[in-house]
Image (cartoon, rainbow, N blue to C red; front, top):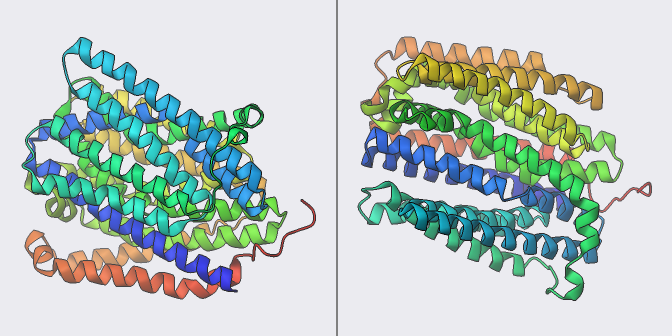
Length: 488
C-alpha cells in the first residue's frame, strides 16, 4: 500500500512537471517566433529537425535500452547487472558524442560557419543528458528526473529573456548552455540513486553482445518516432519553403502539446511498471495497469482535442499573434491527430513491453511512409497549400498507425481498448465546445488575455483533481512489487 501510494504521487508529480515543462517550452518557442521573422523561425525549425535526427542517428537507442534494462534489473534486484548495464552504456554514449562533435567541428571549419558546430555540440550534450534522464527513469528516481526536466527549459527561456534575440545562431547557443547544465544535474542526481562506483567489472563486453539485438531494435523505434515529428518541417525546409515551414511548425507545436506532456509519463511510469508486471508473469496486473493509464491519457487529451477543433484561430492568435493566423486551418486539421498521437505512443510502448519490437517497428514504418508521401505531395502543391496538405497527411497517417496497432494489440493480450467510450467522450466534448463557440462567437485574444491567469490556474487545478480522483484506482490497480512471482 505504501509503495502504490508513492507510485501514484510520483505519477502525478511527473505529469504535473511535464505540464510545467511543456508550458515553458511553448513560451520559449512563442518568444522565438515573435522575436524573429517567419522565415528565420522556419529556419530554426528546420535546423532543430536536423539536430533531433543527429541525436538519434548517433544515439543508437541507448536511452531506451538503459530505461528498459535498468528497470528490469532493479525489479529483479540484480545489482551487479544494474551497474554493468549503466556504465557500459554510458561509455558508449560518451564515445559516440565525442565522435559526432569532432565530425561536425571539421565540417564547420570547412564550411566557414559556426552553425554546424553549435548543432554538433547541442546534439552531443543532449545525447548525454537524455541518456542520464533515461537512467533516472529506469531506477525510478522521479524526483531527480523532475529536477533535470525542469532545469533545462527554465534556463533556456531565462537566457532568451535576459538577452535580446536576433539570430538563429544565438538560439542554438542558449540551447547548448541549458543542455550542459541539465547534463551536470543529471549526473549529480544519479550519484544519489544507489548505483555503485565504476570499476573494471563495470564495463561488460558480454552485456553489449547479449543486448545488441534489442538495442538496435529500440534504436530504430526511436528513429522512427522522432522522424515522424520532424519529417514535415525537414522536407519543406530542404526545398527552401521556410515560410510554410514556420506555419506548419506553429500548428504542429500546438497540436503536439498534450502528447508531449503525457509522453514522458507514459515512458517513465507506464512502461517500466508494465514491464515489471510481465517480468513477474502477472497478466492480470498488466491488464489493469494498461487500462488505468489508457483511460487517464485519453481523458486528459479529449478536451484539448475538442477545443483545438473549435477554437484553432484563438489558439494561434493567443500563442503566436496574427502573424501566424494562416496556421489556424492546418491546426484544425491536426486536432484529431493530437488524441491519436497519445494513443499511438501508449500502444507502441505496450508492444515493446511484450517484446514485440519488430512489430512496433513495422507499424511505425508504415505510419512514417504515409506521412512522407503526404510531405512530397505538399511540396508539389506549393508554399501556400503545403501546411494544409501536411496537416491532412499527419491525420491520415495517425489513423492508419493507431488502427494497425489496435489490431496487433488484440492479438497480444486482452487489453480493453474502449473505443465506444472514447467516441462518446469525444462527441460530448466536441458538443460542449461547439455550444461555447455559438454562445461566445467573438471569444478571441482580448478575452483570453483578460482571463488568462484564471484559465491557466483552473487548468492546473483541474489536472491536480483529475489525478487525485485517479489515485485510489491507481493504488487498487497497480501490483505491489514486493510480491514477486516464483515463475521467473
